[in-house]
Length: 490
RNA sequence: GGCGGGUUGGCGGAGAGGUUACGCAGCGGAUUGCAAAUCCGUGAAGACCGGUUCGAUUCCGGUACCCGCCUCCA
Image 1: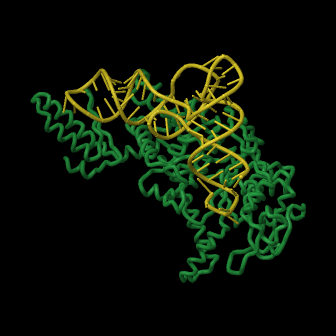
Image 2: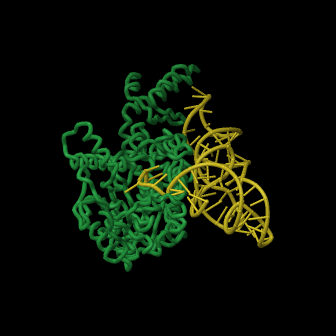
Image 3: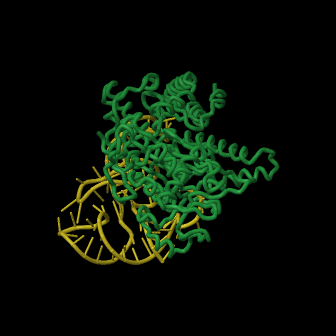
């Protein structure tokens, strides 16, 4: 069996991954706060952990991996948006407006992440569906002396957990020296954070032993992971920005509530996204969503390709340049497969995976190296002498391996190739190919190539690629193909 | 101020203590009426300063610069 190695933020080393239970490998990843469209940075953990999900499914079996990613639908920003709509004169109740806002945001999120080729997690719990579990956990922490109630708030007593700060490599004293923590009068210690806070009448709230209120952000993930994955599970993932304080707080809550559980064994953090060398932010004017890119006709596969070209542990720079290069490479893969009808018209046979690619992926998700293996294979498949010297059966085998390997990275090349083929009016292309052959014969006889060249450039301007070799003529559809222009040439 | 990440050839981006990354661009060649595409080949690197070593871009220390987190902005 393939051994997966992962860099564990908790130990700061690359470790062999050994599941607690190989028949149920469990992973939790912090999901989005659903107040607006996902921006490009949100896509990075989604893609990174999607690849890990696929890899785990490949190694342990599709039915033996549980992947939980939450939706945070209790949040000030959601409330603010709902109140804004209310302020604009919407007659519906705040609850209805909030519900509408979160529903539509979750729908968008699914659309956008689907477009990136990300599999849906096994479970996508919403915070509002697990308030009871959060209240129970909060009460448990109070009972065990790790939390206290003050002024309608319940706060976690950070000093009561000696392991606090280990994940992010900070000491409590250092953080206080930083002196940027909010010092609320009801806190015993400046580092203490909120587990439960009171709600005003015009905000969503739930009844609790401490009055009507709502959960703090951190307790949501602790409670939901406990409910769906148990007190100990294999992998906890998220962006490096969440390492502190969110993940630190999750650990404190879960370890104090269930000391025997151990919580997540492996912690993984993806580095941040940048845009043209800068952090993406509204103030810099380089802020955009996944949907913005999709609308600009940058397909999800291209976005995925760019993301996977950089190892998850490094900052990744999104540039137009990279998107262009990714588009070309994928077009090459798809174009190469689209003309192999025998391949597209029957179910793919299982001939395994490219071992070098699998090895790269298993080595701490080296997607960059994995992609370069695929590129090398694509070159091999694309008319290289060694490939052409194989018999049909052997060629087919190699193609199956390539497609299956790309699929492990989340590229469905078969589907893309079918779409590509569907775009091409096969009969028309055959007709023009024949005409090119005939014109060339004529031109060679007369020595006048003007008519031939005119036809060729007309086809190019219709968005076709003209490939003429000594003994063959081939037309290929490019992304700018325009059927109307082709029709006009008849 | 504290903590973390980065710095590789023209560009993007990996691995490995000594032996080709890979891709794009460039250059040369094959093919072609020309071109495109494809194929074959090829030059080019390791921020800086020390240390360890027979040997470091790869390990250790320091410096510089860039980025992020510490503020419920992923």
